[in-house]
Image (tube, rainbow, N blue to C red; front, side, top):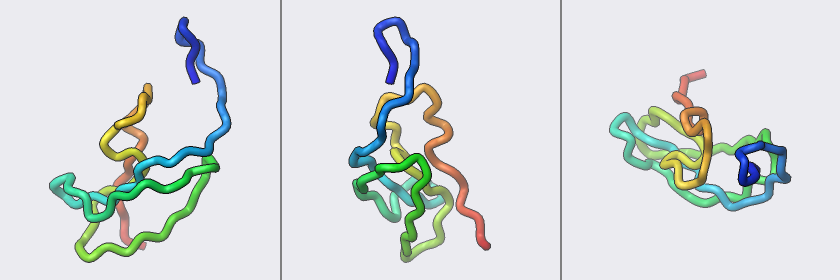
Length: 77
């Protein structure tokens, strides 16, 4: 959270947040609200096409000072 002067502080996390898997054109292969209650959360999502990126709040609907860290490239393991 940030106060009226912009000072940031930790806040408990327990919100419904968009989780998305996107293709190479940034189109959603999966987009659904999920309850995120921990800073580290593991989800397994199966999609029909090859994914390019995945993450939370992929379209930056939430106020975020570093939105570029919401989505990451999908790498094959």
